Image (cartoon, rainbow, N blue to C red; front, side):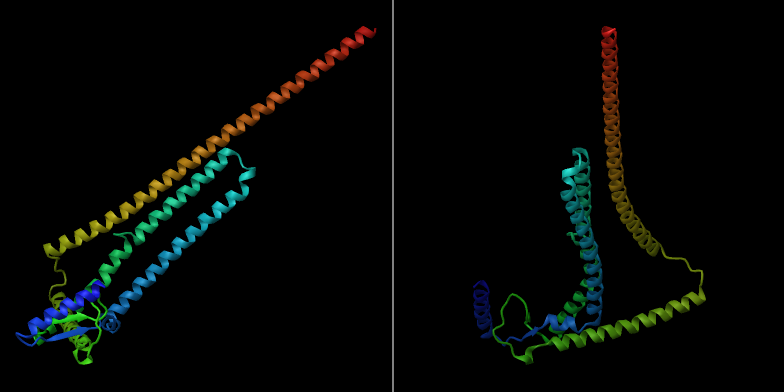
Length: 280
């Protein structure tokens, strides 16, 4: 209903302005454009491949946790309270690790967000730049997106500039390719004339920042791994201590039973001897 109301308001506004001068309107099909940009398809395939690997890793760990839960449920009747608590704590640690990985891969600032921004956003910017360039050159007053929230009840194909946008992107790509080729040739000539040329201060600073960012990311991951490993070792230590106390308790109980048995045997022999003396 809101979309329909918005369309009516826009239509009335355009009709009001139309009386002053003719408006030039066009529209694009963003899905069609992106499907015909090779860089976008390549970036999307790369992202899909990474997402598939991440989901497989998460699914494998989730199944492993379910196996631990099933084993515990089946063996619970024959396990001591201490061992049950240990297994439950182990399952909790695995679940925490699973949630950490989910956040690392698919969180608001996770790997998926960063890779999408790195791969896809530059291509989308390229499309929008082409649209703006065409709109300024052709003096369009409005350029709509066909699949946007604004419903297009009718669209004349002659106002579709999607192919024009693709042509502009192709020309830009060709121009950039020529510039890159020319740049590579210039760099090759510079290397030949000055093979030992040092990096500029700006390049050194950029390289240093990149190395520091990568080192920090690795350090953060290693710190998280170490924290999990330390927690696991602490759990194993507590588990071993509980088992040792349990063994000592069992050994003390066994010795106590042996002493009681020995004492009963001595009392039995004493009564037997007293009985024999009475008979004499």
